[in-house]
Image (cartoon, rainbow, N blue to C red):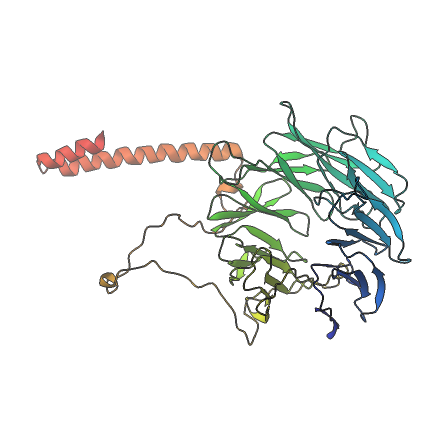
Length: 509
């Protein structure tokens, strides 16, 4: 059963056959799913059927930005009748329900072609080079990016001019690099808008900001040769279309768990470091703006409006979520969603969904709808013997939901809230009647702190002034120690105690 709501009216599609893939169009007007027999496309407004395709093996679906094309993918297979295999990536015209083009796509990675938002440009990676198509004409390659072994790419969001980030892994001692290009200028030594070279990169993840002015590149290795981390090594690089590049300095060693751009395109959040992990917001100069301290977290999620940030710890963590007002850097709530494998914001920026889905976890499947203040508004658990495979919000056009003032008091709910409970160290029964004493911890938690220039007097100084100030403080501290040592010697030496003199001599040395 697939259910969605629009304007408080609920439309249902009841399909008893097993369905393991579905998707909404980017504007939320169309919905498509495969039930193992066919692929269907319906309107979200009234549930009327738009198209039906006889594609029983489809496992992935995607709409083009303007809903002109439906892309379907099924695993690549060979048979006696077709030893070369069949084209498993198919592009369908939603107006006529006719096949536009059938292509070979063996790998599931980067399976879907990337469109610009106006659909004037579409890009595919074919045999380590990029093929560009224009105006959904897939019979003619309009342009190519010829480069040695292009391993990955990312097309910029928005309309024209479109930009593309390409990654080429290093080989034979040469470094890996990422370059930015603006279509259609793809050749020549000066064609690249920016270039960043680096070592220690088996794979990368590239993320454009919303304004398509900069890219964050997370470079990862499979193995950490120092043996410090099971997850390999990660570094974070910044590239801007104006040519600026930088290595983002992270003050704590350890993995980079997540990187998220703010929707305002002027800041980004990084979750990094050995547990308890740190989370820090950086500006476009790669300078830290706010440090959220340490905690059990490995993911960051900005609201669609960018006014709220959720720092969460899922997977092998207990599901704690820290909800922050980004403008005031004030914590709103701290709910918990144990065993959650999925999190996503509602387009309204007021609600979130957490879900426990298969195959990540095959027990206790279900989902919860939350208000960001920590209240659980709706809960649904899968019946015994059934599995939940995917949960998605219906999408809406941009700016459909304006930003609202942040609330700090939990909204009313019949299901209540699940705020994280503070835990105390175990104390034996014989000691429980005694006053509590500070307990030793394996890790000392670091509190949040604002790192904007001018917030603390030290950070408002120039580099030279800060250096001179540190010298003066060190000199003053040295004089204070000498003075205290002399005073201690005079006050204790008058007693004539040999034991006291021995202690004094020990401290002096």
